[in-house]
Length: 141
Image (cartoon, rainbow, N blue to C red; front, side, top):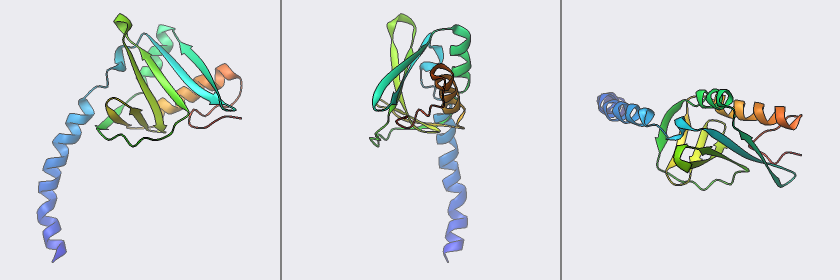
């Protein structure tokens, strides 16, 4: 009985999900025009900051962000980082890397990325600047 209902509902459910996913995936998060990026992370419970100003490097970082979809939820995760995108006209967008492929934008909800390239790139930059392995998701020793 349940198989029959499931197979009847599947096309209907897909018709609801597909437009929603496409709409969410196409909704840009606003930081694609960033001029600089300031990354905050922790080492032994102390906040440290790295600012990326070079246009080429900013473009490389932005190129790693591939939005899958967004969600209006705000789960309130405790994170040990933040990323501040400095936009033209002194505007800023602050996000937290909540999980390897999830950004939390407190004023707008969650941004689900298609992959972990942004997380990996941020860690690569921090590791290079720090001279040792850094993971933005943890309090580094």
